[in-house]
Amino acid sequence: MNIDKDFNLMVGLRIREVREVLRMTREQFSERCDISDSFLAAVENGQKSITSKTLFKICSNTNISADYIIFGKQYGYQMDMIMEMLGELDAPLRDSAVRILSEYIKSVDYIKTKQQTPKLN
Image 1 (cartoon, rainbow, N blue to C red):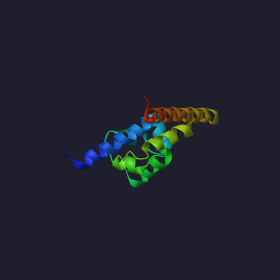
Image 2 (cartoon, rainbow, N blue to C red; image 1 turned 45 degrees about the vertical axis):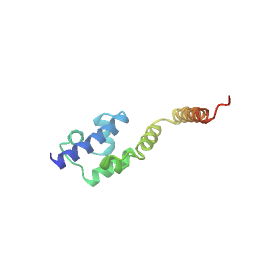
Image 3 (tube, one colour; image 1 turned 90 degrees about the vertical axis):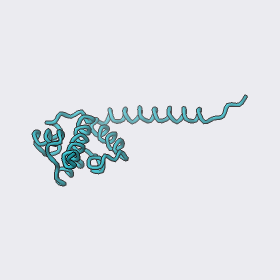
Image 4 (cartoon, helix red, strand yellow; image 1 turned 180 degrees about the horizontal axis):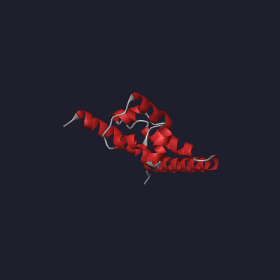
């Protein structure tokens, strides 16, 4: 087992996951991050590694933590993705998404409260 190849593949798969969650083509993602399409394809397939400069470009242009890209740490990743997706929306759609999310959270809190309330016989 080649540790470098395995590491490159894991980093590449995480980058691909970020790109797919953002619903971007390789061309769109590479343009946004100022890297070539062919280099991005090689990275996503684990054939090439990224430099710290490329990591910075990817993280700063997608608002994704370097900890997630390098270590796979999930903490904060979901929040990063939500913020990035909301940021892609225009103001009216973003307001609607925030209202929907707010109502969802209220519903979840209500269900939790109901489940924790002891029933009197």
